[in-house]
Length: 524
Image (cartoon, rainbow, N blue to C red; front, side, top):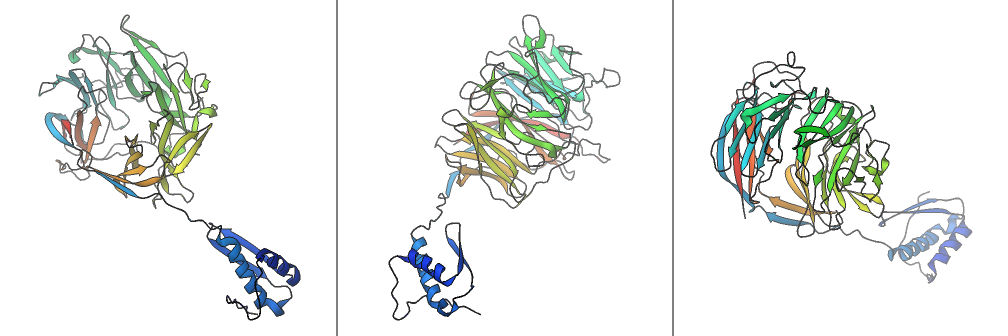
């Protein structure tokens, strides 16, 4: 039987002002089972199953529908989206103030070079066209670097260390300068014995000499060397001891009085307990004067096994607290759930060092990062604290999945370049996406996406590729030191083809690339 729904008032019938009572009376008298489902506060679905009492169905259904309209019309809500804003900051640009041609460098795969501005001096470290380790220095007023090529050594004859680059993109090079001006260099390690050099004279790269140990223990399987200065300008060195999926983070401190290194901590800062390792940022001093750091855990060398974005802070690198001010003992292990920001599972869409951190007006941590959404696409999210818990908000709704997995150095498809709180009270996420390009998402203080910021193209994006080999791309390295002029920054620039998961490439290889130093000035 087909039922017709009439919406006009039937002749001779008046609707009661008590519509709900009519509905109940109808249900009782007609034995009609009614299921009302409201979805999204805007849609009403009426399902009915007729048992008996069909003779007066048309009239009763009319009463029912009109009654339901009366009941729910006053309670319907509409969702108001934040207004979409476009802020044009494209006129804030950087001009090239100076370009210094440095040397020819290896272009067969990318690896991290180093640039350090220290007072009125500048230091660089890189691998040249022959893949030899090179160190350079200049005074800021000079137009040329003095270069020193480190003697070539091999792992077979130098205790597992080498000054010659292979094919591993992990084998970056880094520089530190202590309070007395002595230069420290570490490089070319991916689960290798510690490879470390120290100058015999202050500010003199030509006196760099290799020292086979620093402290003497946990130095046979080192990766990711970094130098950093504390608030008191004490020089620290940290590195991973162990392999991917099985490693600890070790911190050493240098004494200018004894000219020796010692452990800063009696235990590792993070400890994977033989089951995993932490891919972590360097502790960074932020606007509240505390050190802040974050990481993800990884179970195996397969990059898809990253999980559990985590965070902690410290006033002195010795006492550590979670985001809610609770102190805990070192080392940090996976068992310390109080430091977890977002319990992203294995294969949940986060990769090492994918997140960015800033502080809100109350100096509370706020994160931007990526993970998979409910349908498997990769999206940006934010995480912020509220009372004693983390609150998450999805920022993007992209139709794209970056499926990353496997061992070795991989090529990025999505990257959060920066995450900041703006002076207007909003937040912005600078990103690069293989499908959507460069962009800046504008967020309000509720972390809702409210528009975008139009910015000038980032440095390097408009530079023409100088080489002719297929697949060459521009590489840049930022200054890990400090320029005394806030309107000036320095960048190293060169070209290479892409990563090959740390495996050798068959010939032909690209010709050597030219390494440059760019001095950039901010223009408004």
